[in-house]
Image (cartoon, rainbow, N blue to C red):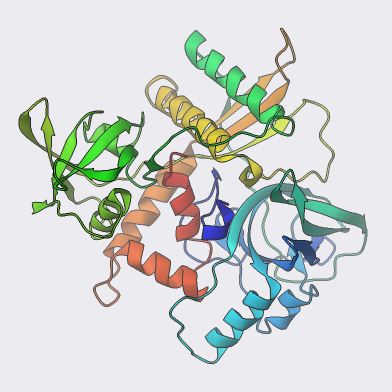
Length: 417
């Protein structure tokens, strides 16, 4: 996901911060079984480790070697599950697990790729999954499925049915965006794309910045501002020159412009004011707003109505950077429209038939996941752990593997790429 740097991977799921919960089942025959097998990716043996189920953290086995050798079974209640998994190079997983067990701290620990996928679990069915290389990217597929009595405990709960579903009629421009984006998703296997932006995209902020410092190395140039982003809410405009962050002037350093902003935001607690001073059309302006990062709602899609197998896995992480960006922008646009026009709706289902050379698809968007994520971020920001910001705690926990399903999901969801 943009895998090698360990970013998770949307929306969404899409995927949110929740306290660790382990749903327990009562009868052994009310579940299905999942396990993972190793496979070569880029000539290295890769393994998979389940870390989240429907936005909740999955309890990890005491013996990490069960994950390493593919003998770890996970037991899931029948129904739809959104799974979060770490994709590791096997040697790196073993080394990292040993260091954690022995309390060793290493300066540059290996970072797994994190993926989300959707799977429909049937009773007494065993699913063996593995990472595969498809069009130069790694995706997760079902290698084999067979009937097998589920004899496990600690059964992970399926998605709860929503009390309110809505299939709205979208305005013409939004409907066109929906059709165009989903057509691209359907055709992706044939048309691999690249990120068209020539500059870095700041995932936390929502800006495309110049790669170099501006105005004699005293400013950051804003080339464009992404719709629905925090930068957009802050009223930043394309062409602005950022000269100060939190009343600290911009001074050239070895850090990239994007990293300068990310580090500033990393010190801002959720809900506190962000203060940015800019030069716009020759005039000095001070922009300020409460730091509430944009969150993408949890979502999943099925291409080709009526053609989905009961055990299909859908992995959004296999999309190209550009297509993932377009898909996320579509989710934000639909969420924004829903917020003001579809009140009290929790889940949107958009079913479209094949017509006029358009593909058939079903897109489900869980709007309630946004508020859950924001409440969880607020809760995290109020926790005090040695004065560290929640972003610093996130990166620390992610490296150590102690909180794998919280902040990584959040990091992917607030991104607009």
